[in-house]
Structures are given as structure tokens and as C-alpha cells.
Image (tube, rainbow over all chains, first blue to last red; front, side):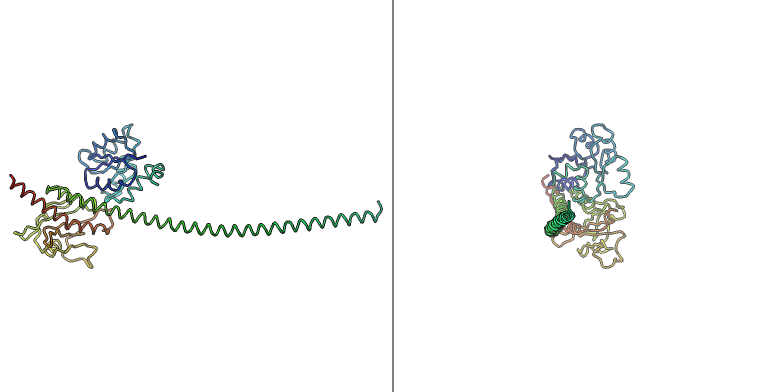
Length: 129
Length: 235
């Protein structure tokens, strides 16, 4: 069964890159281009996991992450932050806002797939095996 | 019972008992021999299984390494595809410049970059796009001045990892400077300064991206100029 992944980024380059990395796997892709749209799509699409950029227009990824965590219907969805800021304090802030895990840019395909499988759990490993 | 009869009985019983002990010893000896044979078979089978297991583990490790290699190649190819697609997907000058910036930020991994175009009349480079740097400081660079000016003059890229020693005229924190070329003519330059903190250094795919940017960004920018001229004429 395909897992639904919500990709959130304002950069076409990153979205295209993420789509290409996930294209081989059992994933259904949904896209949002800013934090506000991410919150709406998290509610309406109920994805299995969200890949969330940090720096975005309208509403940044950290605020969107906190909002998604606060709402009952979306609080359980794992969120992987995608960040250019790899410094420790930035990562800590992301975790404080409720992210499950993070990857840094430039995105490494293997790392992203491994973290996705990790947050999606054992069922995912069977699907992809 | 008479004494002799009793002694005979004891002797007979003793003989029978000794015989039964001898039979039992022989039976046990046979069993031990059979068990030893079985044990030897087991040891041999275990050794064979261990050998197969080792072979499978080695093969499995090889597959895992190959998987990592293939995935890395896939990511690299995806990088190049995305970069090429983004550069050639528009005739809008601002979008081409934005695409170059996105490629450097998201695929190469630097948030300090500048894009210059050659101004032939001024014999200088003129800044057309930047991110994370002081644009005023880098707005114009005479051709031949500093490492960036030299790249524009010679058409040879500069990458700090490729330099045998740090050139004296290298701009501070300049990691790479890529000439944008149409045929062999330099029409611009991309300067990449500090890499992102989590990026320890340039990788093979970054050099491929430099080559791709060098040719595709130049032609993409040239196409936008042609297109805007054509659009003006059509009006």
C-alpha cells in the first residue's frame, strides 16, 4: 500500500529533487508551497508523513510544524524538517516545535529514504523490501 | 543346598553377569562409534553451513555497498536532471537567475553566491543576482581583477579544492568561481562563497553541476535576452 507523503517547500528545485528521490518508492506525493498550505493539506489529505522546509513565505516551517502538532487530527503525523541550517541550536528549535526528525540540504537521497522508512515504521520496510 | 552346588551357581551367575557386561560394553562401543561418525558429519555440515553463511554475508555486504553506490548515482543524476530542467524551463530572465540561485543553495549547498554578467563596454563584471552576500560590495568587478575577474578573463574555473595553493588574489571565502560560457566566450561568472555548515566539502557531483551551470546557465541567460528582444520587436 502506498504511503502518502506531503512535500512542503517554496522551491521548485527542492520539490522536483524530492519527487525524483521518492519516485521509485511506494509513495503518493502531495505538494504544498508554504506553511499555511501545509497546515490545510495536513488536515485534508491526512498524509502518513510530512517533509517540511523551514524557510518559506506566509508561514515558516517551524510555525507550521507547531500548528500541525497542536491540532488533534494532525498531531500524530510524523514531520521531517528539511533545513539548510544544520547548526545545533536550529535543530533543537525544530525538535522543540515538534518535528520527528530532520534532514539537511543538499538532500542526500539515501538519508532521506532511510529516515522516511524509519518514521513510517516496520510496515514500510516490508512494503519496500 | 550343598556347598559345591552353591559355588557352581555363583560361578555361573558371575559368568552370565560378566558376559552381559561384555555385551553391554560392545553395544555402547558401537553406539559411541556411531555417535562419533554422526558428530563428524555434523561438524562437517556445520563447517559447510558456516562457509555458506560467510559467502552469503559477503554477497549481502556487496549488494548493500552496490545499493548505496546506485542510490548515490541516482541522487547525483537527479541533481543534474533537476538543475538542467530548472535552467532550461523558462525564458524569463529573473526565473533563470532564481533557478541558478536555487541550484547553488539547494543542490550544491551554499547560501553565499553571486552571479555576474560581462559588460563588454565597461570591461567589467556586473552583478545580476546574489544571495547571502553584500551586493553593493560585489556590484562590479573589473575583468582580470582578483580571482573572479581572472576567471572571467581566462575562462578557466577556479575551485579551491583543485588549487595546489591558495592564490593571493583569491577573494575571501571564495569556494568556487565558474565561468558561464557560450561556445568559448565568457558571458558571465558565478561565484560561490562559503558552503553550508553541514557540508564538509565539494563532492564529485558538485563538479558536474559546475560544468552544467557553466554551459546551461549561459545559454539560458542568452535565450532570455533573445526572447526579450524578439518580444520587443513583436510589439
